[in-house]
Image (cartoon, rainbow, N blue to C red; front, top):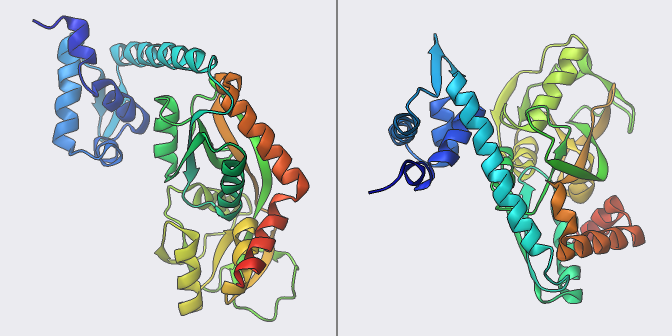
Length: 322
């Protein structure tokens, strides 16, 4: 017969609990986990029966953690912390030139410079395997929490992240959102006021994406309503195709615009005030003590000190004949 501890840890129950505790929404948590809502409900009820108390309660349609739920959440974070620390300590004894590095890459970020760097890194360290995966923000944070990726490449500062204490970050570049439009009366490089960017409909990222959040925040701070949205897409490539085919407007990071300038049949201008943020590595603090991670960072710094990030994007665009 299984013990109470075995009942708790015999499946992905704690992962399900963590996802629900983060989203506080059964439907959203089930979608992120790739399971049905009834399956998630069943696992949570199983955990509640095991610990002998409800972990969540509802007020109207809003879900909350109970006292028992808060205790379970703290314990679960502690458990994952111990396991992650043990894994990192083991890996700290390994070689700098062998092993595997798991990287989660935010799917809305331009990846050309990283693709080139990883190819370069392979020529120097062929025995280090790089696993490079495009992910959503939710996927990145779930895998960081569960030690399924070593490094994340994403935009900051992300206000949706509740617990920064175990993590650290390294800035890659300063980014800026550019207004992508078809108004040829606006001179090149002239900053555009928010109220002047609302006359024409927009295509945007989905509402829960970081860049959509930054746009809403910027417009709100200037007391200007967001432009009318006519479509949403998850990648900058899709946004550009829609802009080219329809004549609507959008906003894109400087890095993507520089990498694909000749493919974009629209003008680009900064906003006034500017919409700034960072592209950065995010990782658990202990990761830098792993030899191959430390070596990876050293070579990354060396590579981009020879030619900076945006310059490499432009050079790659020219090389490809875009």
